[in-house]
Length: 57
Image (cartoon, rainbow, N blue to C red; front, side):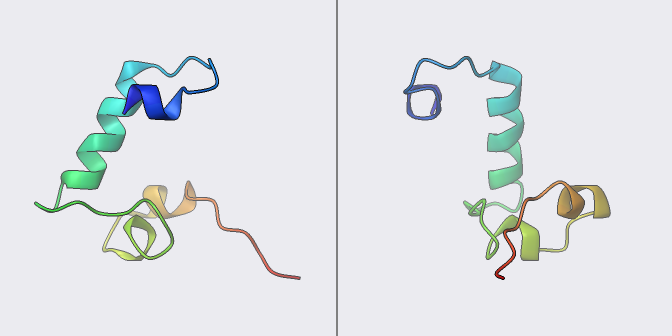
């Protein structure tokens, strides 16, 4: 996962990757990090607020 995310040479802290993996698998199955996945589940307000969504104009 680290190789995929940091393919352009940018540094990604392993703690961020560990947290991302924990969130994606917390329900016992893989959950997408998209507007259909984590942002639509019964998550807390902080998780929903920190998720970026683009707005159509």
